[in-house]
Image (cartoon, rainbow, N blue to C red; front, side, top):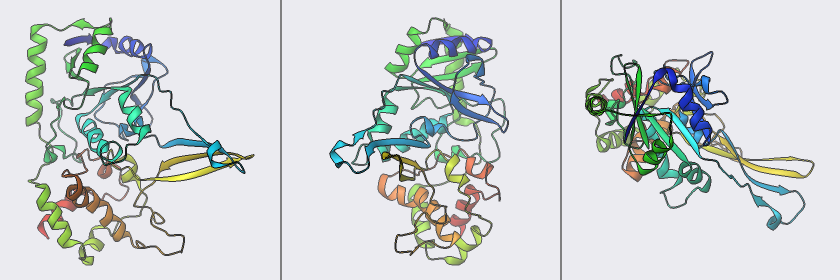
Length: 345
């Protein structure tokens, strides 16, 4: 099912989605674009390249309450926090970010233990994927083509959107997507010319160039294993790192978290909050021992997790080449160049 709407009427589409549930969409902020919960339909702005942070918080919030309890009372009086989620619409996610949700599903849904919070958020959400503008060059930090992701890949989206002049084309990819498009009366029917344009755009997206190298998952996995004890290599590539953790917080596939308890007047909440393997105390043990006291050990862990351990365990690289970690690193560490160096070492 192909529908369309004028770009000038995006706020009408946003309002229609808000009538049906929670809308998360890109908004222009002082420092750039980010996905936020929309309160005013006029906030939605599709004139962006990519957001500062990935939209993973739609399914994995920065802070999430799990259990409520009262101190001094038996454990069986504690209760699980009920989500009671309304339908949610993630509007405008780029193909590399949509791919990241599939990778994150491995950890939260398919690795043997199902995370009910992630699962519910995924099930209640409709993903509106959004193709990159093929008329504009890729950003210098991007390399999603290396990882087999196209600039206009609809896979993983429920609805996929492509700009055509002054119009926005919306095509259903899944039954969930078809259902929502049929319900949105603000949309017009796409014509044969629109369908042809959409199909050709998807094909052109495969040819869109980002930074690219020949990267076979098995080869990089083995190479990083061989380099694991090469302290000189890891010290050199991590020499500028200040362990700020920004790379992990903007990353769409980083999922480390800590469990915290917060009590006030005997009322307690157990919650999870984002954490990062790049932080100095991430591996600090209660005994006082820390197996990763050096920066190079922490960066080695992050790189190996994404490009070696994850491939060994699940058969896929845990990176989508969005380039956010490089773009927002305060000391210009480039993960693409690091992997390139590793392959040549």
